[in-house]
Image (cartoon, rainbow, N blue to C red):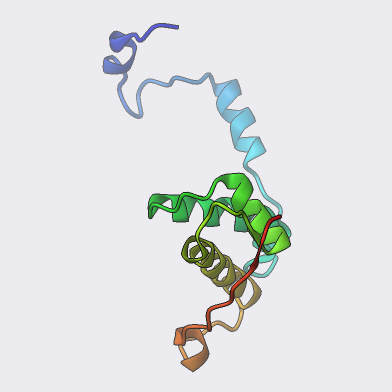
Length: 129
């Protein structure tokens, strides 16, 4: 479909609607959650593995990391680095992964203290064959 400038420029916020009431209600229903009484971090713990890969890869990509999404997945799931990737880039991803895991696993008791502010030692991982 081609671009229609008039479609966008004629829109009046809070007056006009792009979606029908039925479409809006259907989308709202999809976004409903029954998790209001669960502790913080419950949902994040359920989706942690996918979150670790996607968030680590996207965040590191913004900083110039050249690992692909698949490289990131192998590194996080198997602890193996592809032959053509640098250890520094791998460590960047693994540090991000550790930070996400720490936040999700300690949601209830996280605090500013020596443990949360002290860098952890560098860990070198084996390369993929």
